[in-house]
Image 1 (cartoon, rainbow, N blue to C red):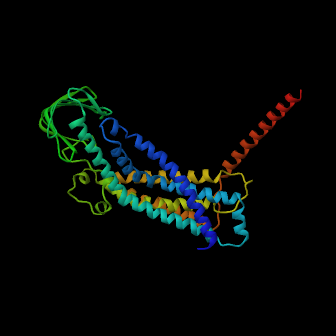
Image 2: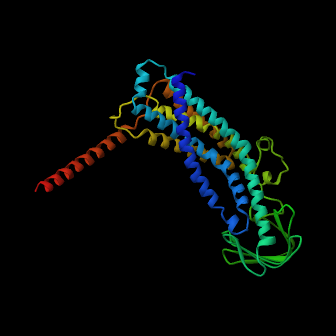
Image 3: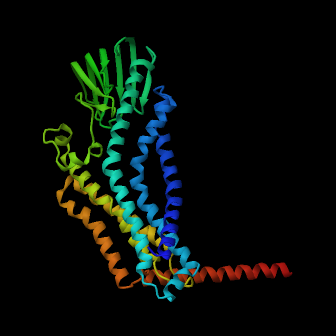
Length: 393
């Protein structure tokens, strides 16, 4: 690799890190603080809280990483243009690949990292985090909640225990669930117990009162009823497993007898194709950055700032990818679109780079922006002239 390419690669990667670390820290902090109730409500230690925070981190990196790529590359190229380095490179007769090669090398490496995290690290982290939360709520019911007192487990979910016995056995259970907007659920049970894995609360000899929105009330008596503590939703006794928690091997060849797969096969299909396409976004966004800011240009040219243009395009591509991925859950015809969006965006960017075309604003937008800028400049000039006249008097 040439010295100039190393220089561009180093600057781009440094700017990528400068962008990634603060944004990732902010989003990570928000996500972690949203789960602070794990400590305040369940009595867990700060070590457990730190472990949960570590499990959350891999779920955020694939989302933030592509945008850090587009910001880091665009900012680097724009700074080089402002320092006349782009003009010097062109004047020296260097081929455009001197600029493109280091940028794309970085993008491909980060795309590979995103693929590994999304398909191998993130599912395991999600599963570990859910198991940890399940154990925390199991401890909440079996050892933390005081007897004969109401306790809020989460918004819309309350529980009271009359007596607590050894072996995670609970007497006199009263549980209220207002989380479902269609039903108000009230559970009574003479006895309950939490399984060894801490994922299921089994209530015995009780009844559940269901009240619909129209006021209809139904009462169902049960000998045994299971409540899933891992997702804090009603369950048949098995912990709820989402498509995002599954390994790549399972998504490639799902078990046809798996209850979660049978309940929502579309979500597993959409999750597989999302994982197979999202890793391309760092490469696509790098190409967008090269189109927007990869050529020497005059600062006098009336146009949007390259960072604004690049981010608008990046957000549009990301939103479109998210839309078609969600559509694939209910309609298999959306599956080709999941791959078409990033591939078509990349091909358009490659075509513009190969033909040396530059991204330009539509004429009506440019004229409107110029008109408003001229009006603002004239008004500012009149205000300044009036201020100087008043000072002279």
